[in-house]
Amino acid sequence: MKIPLVSKNEKLSLVKQCELLSIPRSCFYYTPRGRSELDLVIMRLIDEIYLENPTMGSRRMSKEITKTHKIKVGRLKIRRLMREMCISAIYPKKNLSKKNPEHKIYPYLLRNLSIDRVNHVWSTDITYLRLEDGFVYLTAVIDWYSRKVLSWKLSNTMEVEFCKSVVKEAIEKYGAPEIFNTDQGSQYTSEEFTDLLKNNNIKISMDGKGRALDNIFVERLWRTVKQEEVYLRDYRGIKDARKSLKKYFEYYNTKRRHQSLDDEYPEDVYYGRIQSKMAS
Image (cartoon, rainbow, N blue to C red; front, side):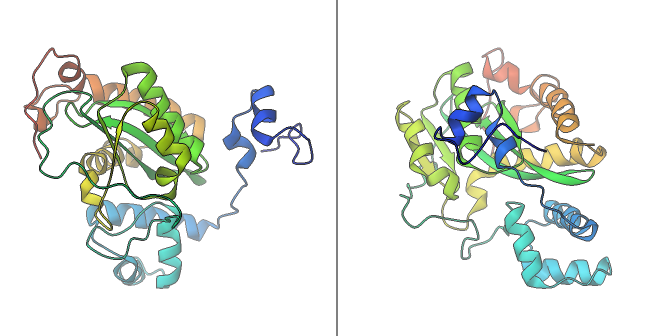
């Protein structure tokens, strides 16, 4: 993709140039990765294997792909691809998320907390999403009490603005939650992101180090989306993915019954038509 009207040499900032030209910043910052077909195959296998067994780290993942799928791939390459895909094994360990040591880490506020109302706790995360000839990132905001997906977005990059925009959209539509939970990734610990929460009087909660299960409802959402939607499609590109996911999330919120909600719909629970019984 070429964006010829945007220049790094102009006096105006890149952000301002993109705003004036109505060009999404992600379009400018995106550089085609030139991924080989083999890399894309390996990334698809990582995604599918991780979905079945999220405790599998780079060493076991490397052995599984090499022995089961007959693709010889080293642990270091698997580790690099897993990081790029926002994937890390779920067990107490050194956190593989890219943290910035200068950013403040906030405590986890949800342990033993009784979540008994909508907009009590929201959370967000990012996941890898495969395309026919590449991949993009999907992020979403979910209300813990009702399981309703409040907003979602796709992007070619994981920059802070991508993460902020999905939260801004949710707040504009539904007001602010009392608590917002994230992992300790640098996008979420940045002042730019945490200031958005503070300015809306939202308490900040962050997963414990190496504890992806602290954000369990988003992890479950990714599993459901991939099993029921992504793996059944071959998105031709980001536009195709966006169109199909829009239909899926509408279905997820309004027509998919959730066992954890006594087989009710998230939309009904969120708007008080049905009372939820929080389930872990």
